[in-house]
Image 1 (cartoon, rainbow, N blue to C red):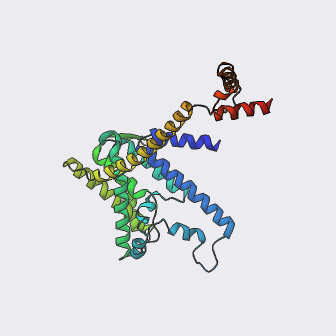
Image 2 (cartoon, helix red, strand yellow):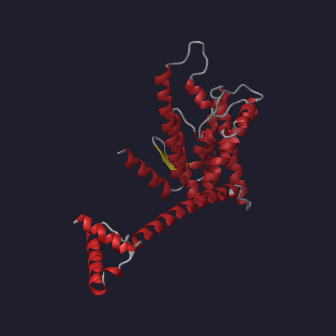
Image 3 (cartoon, rainbow, N blue to C red):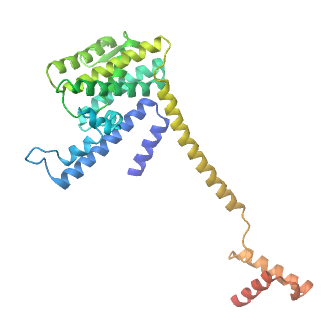
Length: 305
């Protein structure tokens, strides 16, 4: 069953669009992280009474963004890993729903190739805003999640199609620009209420990148082109490696199919044919005409009998 599920996931990742791939990556990492949390919790117990970090919190700190910029510089990968990291179910649920709903609009309007640059640049901008403001304010620690990257896509959709209508439960049809405004207002209220302040600042940083990305695109500059170029190079490299391996395997299989059987074969039909050929040669030219290999074969055949 699990093998079948894994094959389905790989198939969807291969044939799906960038929104589908990003959702798959985030969900797979979410499942992995929560399995690690389960095993660590069962193995080490609950949070120590002195308030020190639990083993799971130490594990998360290796992939989450810290408010300590020195730590982030020593662990530079956190700028990328943090934007794919979720622990809570509701956190990843709303992020993936927003990514799916608003990402489809953006992909339809400016192309699927713009989704990954928007997501990554939004996530990076949110990370830099979080780390920068952490030096001046106590805005919480650590930071992780796809929210900043998703907010870049949300704002981009509102700029590209402000009058596009979405049917909402209990509200009916609502224009996209108002939905985006409400989402931004929720982040502003979050800052005012001092609830997950760092996260809300990061969201607004991602939103700013969404506006900046579309603004530049309309002026003829695609700031996501280097990311797409790098992505294409990576995909092309692995595709080339895969084709090389497949070609080598096919070559080996072809050589094996075309390889002639050994003179002393265990195959019954080949064995009998060789024996008959040697006996006919003896009748026609005498035993002295046999080669050393034929003599050895005949001796072996005599022993078998």
